[in-house]
Image (cartoon, rainbow over all chains, first blue to last red; front, side):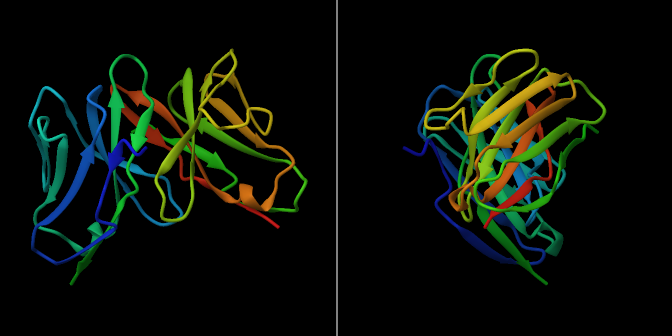
Length: 113
Length: 114
């Protein structure tokens, strides 16, 4: 049973436009959510995160929105740049000192010049 | 920022041999490291939690005798794939907690078993 779902395997947007990546989760015990960016043959790099007590977190061009009632979060990238092209993983952590992360399958974002 | 280094980044081995992958925290100490495995177009699946000075904690379905984990120091964890078979071919990634709430990942190790 997949607890973190990224239903869109790929997304293609034009440079300068907004990219919206979506993530759904089923485990109500998750209290912290993260987005990681991954290039081929490299490890994931941390992008942005949000605690379950918040509904929005912004960092430059990146904003993450959390809708707890819908168990849904999204990553907005504005404006999108060709260098943003990568696989984006949504990850979730359950409460406590346990830092185990549960990942979604990822969404391949392609930003076209 | 915190850096996690993995070695080797690529390894090809014959079926039946053992392969060791190292994971080092370069500028911080990590009492806990995590080993993930990723198959093509799949998510990162947690294999085990490596604890410094004690036994690793394995996720359900992961064979502890096949994937040996040693965390002998605060900066080094090793994963040994014993008696490797072609189905063990995968991308193995380690991570460590470098700050509050965030894991830092290594670059990963691509294992190909012939």
